[in-house]
Image (cartoon, rainbow, N blue to C red):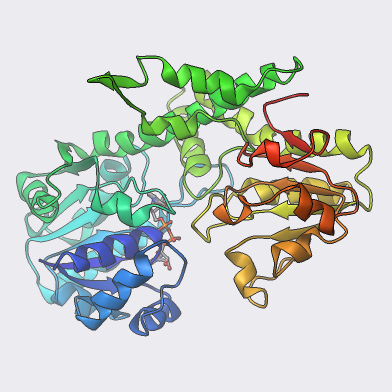
Length: 448
Ligand SMILES: NC(=O)c1ccc[n+]([C@@H]2O[C@H](COP(=O)([O-])OP(=O)(O)OC[C@H]3O[C@@H](n4cnc5c(N)ncnc54)[C@H](O)[C@@H]3O)[C@@H](O)[C@H]2O)c1
């Protein structure tokens, strides 16, 4: 099919590149010319595992066409995905302006071109009733309802696993305003035959995406609250507690004596908290939406409250270990909110760095992705080091924030070689504690 994508970000490019690799002809439009230029030169404007290789192929085969000309995109396509950002406003409510600007742009050009039966598919995350209260009224002002179709096709990918998540979806949600729009979206995804296709109305589709993100955020905050309680008793290991929970047959299914571990296992872990461009923003947006409806939301309020506290708890542990943080050399390992991405939006490491700065610590950070480009990635309140070793030199304390594989080999010998007096906080319970002296290794969720 000939399809358009508006927004060359994580979601837009994953959608566009993956669909073009499956044989669809995709035209990508973005406001930022640099991104389009970079795509034409086969350079992905951000890092996402496996996506660069697919980009090479799809640009070469001309199945992916970047353009800054919206007319060209609309003329050449039967429908398009809107994949622009939906950031938080000051009051945490959702900022729909990028979506509404895209809708207006498409509507005006469809009108000019007198194009009929064009299907607009919204992939951005938007709060319930956005379609009915804002998007449809805007379209109806410019176009006759019979000349366009609209559906919500929310994206569930995880950064770092975006290609695999897109190519192997467990569900495709299509919330459409009419049969035509539904059938159009179904046709695009019909080759994903292992996925459940859920067809519904736009408002249910909007809510499904928020329920999804709120649920996984809740599991993380649940784990962290259990850790907070466990840490008050010497010797309780929260990781073991939660592993035992996962073994429960209501969570881990047994088929023919084979245990099937659920994916939610990776959310039942204590740590420095969730970050990224989705969980914090989306939980806050749905809370704000609920507030406008006068709905009491104690559970989701607590999810955010518990999460917001995580970086400061890590810093308190650092303070306890070093007594004072003043002029102490602290090494931060991992700046991205998770491994295998370059996304630092709402990353817990940055919140912790702010708090460490307030206590006059000297901060040196290493991130396997950001450190590759030291000249581009400049930060005002800490030094980004080019190697792991240089970040450890003369350090008083290392704090691991991100589970990059590159950190897996850390051990006592490496710390001894570079640090003043080795001390480490494993903020994710990721390292093998047996590779460190007992008085050196400390982890979140376990008090010795
Ligand atoms: N990143 C994720 O992991 C993820 C996962 C699922 C859903 N989502 C949702 O998908 C949406 C997009 O997220 P993202 O992370 O890809 O955002 P992003 O910030 O990486 O990309 C958005 C892109 O849209 C472009 N843009 C903005 N306004 C435009 C306009 N009027 N016309 C053309 N281009 C425009 C920007 O230049 C940018 O390239 C958000 O609603 C987000 O909540 C994100």
